Image 1: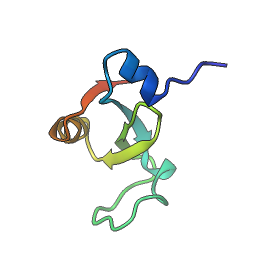
Image 2 (image 1 turned 120 degrees about the horizontal axis):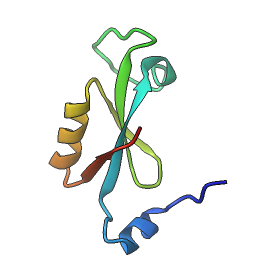
Image 3 (image 1 turned 45 degrees about the horizontal axis):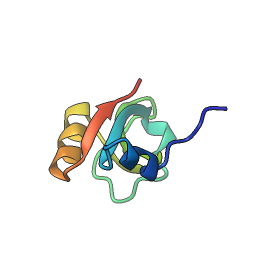
Length: 81
């Protein structure tokens, strides 16, 4: 089992505001999204912004917007594959 890094672990590394962006499929989150004005296909690729503890913070339509949103909120985004 892989160890889980907490926010405190990231803080100790000097990166308290580190977040990660990863691809997800719309069908995996469509029931969790409220007040959406966009039609999403179940297999559409979206980009989720996650906190250091793995909590999903936001879902964006494209990677650039996810990175921009993180930076606008003084977070340091990184990609995961």
